Image (tube, rainbow, N blue to C red; front, side, top):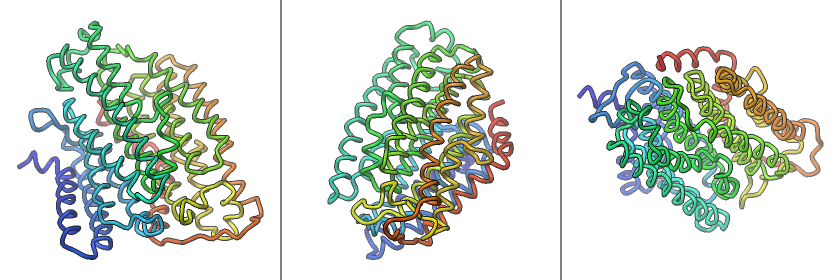
Length: 471
């Protein structure tokens, strides 16, 4: 019973999914009931994740881990998804996806993320990955009447299946050489196994598959079209929860190389970090569609976090987790504001639609400005400290040049983030800026903003908590 108590966050979300399906079957008002029920389930899971954080260990013959940084990830997933659900209550009516299944799929995706973060066995990683990915494929195209949504879903499923093929082939080679799928046993024997070419090949294929999931260059091709074609709230969940779940698995690899300083994949991570940062930042400048701009921005942020993967030390693990927590609330907040301004049939997504927003709706303009400042990495917001910690880890790993590339990329990115602020505050609107206010959406954006501010003003609180579980 203690084991079941220790995985209560997972059990709550899984039970919530079953009950949600029953509500969808039996109730004619499931579209009104399910968002609040789903939000309650996710809030409960996040509270228990905090309460059980000190109950570290493994259960089910070492297949799942509990407590510690695993539950920090669970908190990120559940609170992030809860904010997305709040932002979706009014938005999906406008988008044309007013279905109860929408919320059930979000809960399933979150369960997949939680399994990935908890996994201590390669098969559990794959189960969590596929549960999350399949839900995202469906959510991307949940409005069958929209051509953009159909295109997004098709591109995502094709490239996602391609990435899953890499992961499965990698797992096969790892099992063939290590004779186990237990991650803890693979970590224990990592140093001798690292001299086996088949084992390294399997790990490399595994990394390539997850490079698709974190949207790193050159495995980023699906990102702009999928983010643009999907519902805006779902794009927010994909770019944060999905990315954080993939990084939670890659961090397990870091825990293997950090003690032995045998980071054989440092060149790989250094290259994809450099290319992702430079490519994402430069191409984002040319985007006029705000969702596409944030998609290329997401590629750049994957590059910043990959600096930590290249560093391969305990400081980098703490830095990545802090960065993911900060990025989740910055990006979710930005996408929720976009969803409130967005009109019907994917209109009002261009930068020109934000001209003079402050005159029409100063509340949304202020929230959007805060998220843009935070994403650009300007102090005192959480985005600054996220980048600071991964850059410091790179310097300590003698990768100062990589930190310099990160700083240059950050300087480039300031332009396209501040451009949005300039348009909102310093340009006169040529046409009226009509905004469909959503009280629930504003609430979700305000909660996101509070997290961004608190993590920025008191970064040591979260960082100390993360590092306490790494020792």
